[in-house]
Image 1 (cartoon, rainbow, N blue to C red):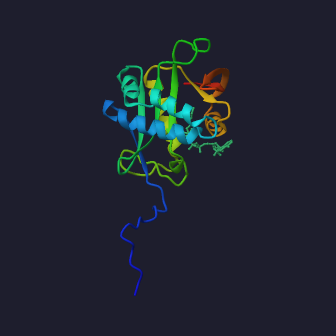
Image 2: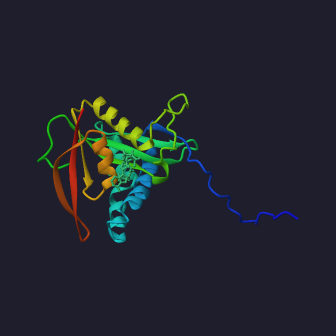
Image 3: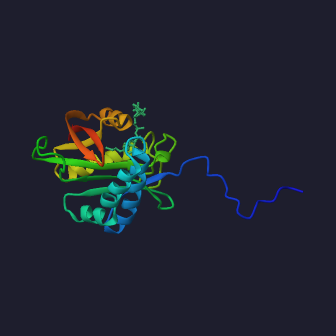
Amino acid sequence: MPDQPQPNYIPPPPPTVEPLTLHPATLADAPALALVGAATFLEAYTWMLPGPDILAFCAEHQTPAAYAKYLAAPTTRITLALTGAEVPVGFALVCAPEISDDVTLPGDIELKRIYLFSRFRSSSTPVLDAHGQPIPGLRGGQALLNAAIADARSLGGRRLLLGTNAGNQRAIAFYRRNGFQEIGTRTFIVGDQHCCDLILALTL
Ligand SMILES: CC(C)(COP(=O)(O)OP(=O)(O)OC[C@H]1O[C@@H](n2cnc3c(N)ncnc32)[C@H](O)[C@@H]1OP(=O)(O)O)[C@@H](O)C(=O)NCCC(=O)NCCS
């Protein structure tokens, strides 16, 4: 007699990753942005920050209210990455610069956040165009950055700035591949940790 599935059997995940589509975020997306922001921040910084500091940061900055505030600002644009089942898995947020005045110039826009769950970073994750067709060779992270650059230009930006942890080698390689150049550093304290960010800029 063939094996019967157990009543609480959970099937294995599908072998391929769900395609992504990109959408401009609206106020209604604030809870989704907070969820993705907290989850990807946790995933990205387990190697660097103690748990209490991650929790404290997320409780203050990765909240629906924090994203609603960004979305209400005329100088903010957020692009959300969704699977076909409308699961939010990443986003890119550009806004008026919050980086130190020492490095900012008129016409600067900041890429404040760009997050994509690691499961969706693979080259086998298709990114679909507005007609539902895969865009050849385009990965999810690159699609989000392209959207952020387009958003920054639509805001009249002449330069796109960002700060990223000096140990975040993957993100740094990604930004350098896209033409960002280092223009400075900043240090700050999270909990008991002294952190160092590289400040990178891309001429638009
Ligand atoms: C930043 C992010 C959106 C980039 O998207 P991505 O899909 O990972 O980017 P890509 O795979 O296109 O590029 C990453 C590059 O880093 C390289 N890389 C990966 N791990 C690396 C490492 N440990 N050291 C150096 N380079 C590394 C990859 O080989 C790739 O380079 P390639 O152009 O030669 O292929 C994504 O990694 C992410 O969401 N990270 C977590 C959140 C985060 O760190 N955000 C940025 C905060 S400022």
